[in-house]
Length: 71
Image (cartoon, rainbow, N blue to C red; front, side, top):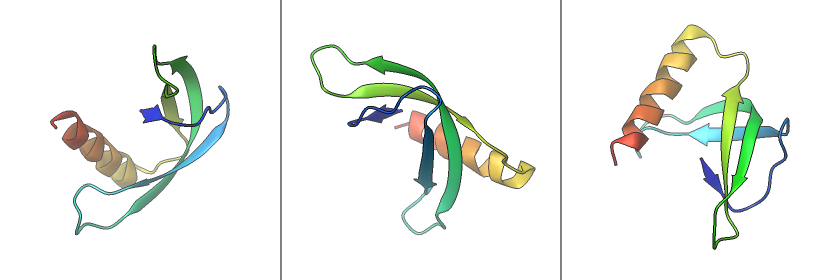
């Protein structure tokens, strides 16, 4: 994902994800696995590994990510 503030590798992030405006918000915790500063920008791309998701939450997070990729 792209963020405006630097987050170090192994840093913890909490994400509030929502598939559609009316749908419930899912709160997930993750650990930053990589960071890359975007050229000509003060923004960063980061990779996040989600921690301790049960199967139903994992599926919903995956659906949200797929939906975002379609935009």
